[in-house]
Length: 355
Image 1 (tube, helix red, strand yellow):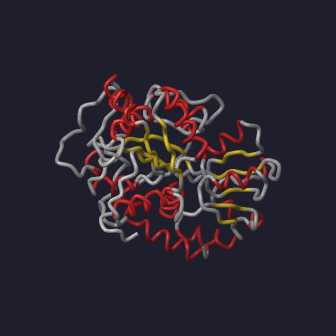
Image 2: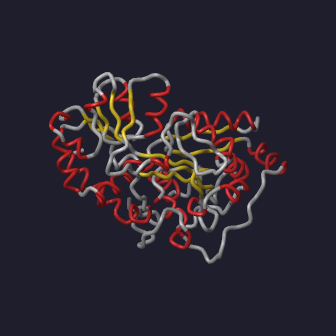
Image 3: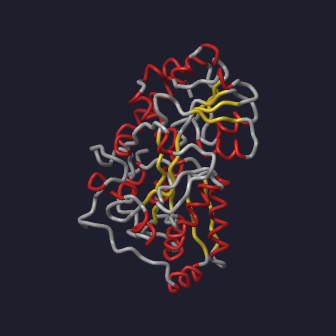
């Protein structure tokens, strides 16, 4: 993208842990604004606005469940979910704002680097829900209160249990280079999916581009969204997925479908998807109410239980039967580095895989 003010390169050049302190501070404030409770006045003002527009890269069924839960809790306020891949969300907002169109109220992206851009360009509104202030770790909330981690998940390997025996399943990314998997692997594209952009950055950093060069020789089925590889796996179009959403695999497995997650011995890419309210939101009160709800214990437990996602809200419980995040080796996320290197990563990936 080369839209003025929204270039992926017009951002922080340093690195640091995701959302952590000064690494993401672009404001003169020394701390976030005071936390705001959900008041009768806020609810009434939101009901007068009547709707909230939510741009998100969350898998559509999960986003719609969140929307329906909000609508049930706050009758009279409709949620319009606009779901597409994170890179498309970013592009759409860039195009709208360059044309002075302010349509989005609340945004969620699986590419946390997008929030660096939006914040530095002054597009996000400071708003700290009470539960974020009380129950979220400091590294998962912006120092200036402009966004917080709505969802956390992994990009993982998985296999179809009807096509692959457990003993023969890949255990590592290195295993995917075995000739026996040629023509049997599906993976998503970093040019469409923020999850895969983030995962590709971590993997090329930790495994090297030589791994991708060898994988490209495996006759990969290339799809777009990180939600697509689990779907191809589920219906048996491919036996193994090289990347994709852990949460889709959880949903499918718990519904009795023949899929099994694999946590690579080298470490699984860690993905963090923040939520933020736009300063020029057309429905500012409904936007704040929806943001507060999305980050509440109620909504966070819903996205864990129903959506297969993970939450950093300290009051939310893991669903029984799922492997705890603390027991999984993960790669380190670095949103600033993804922002700096994103365009080069997409270009190199496209050349390697010819897509």
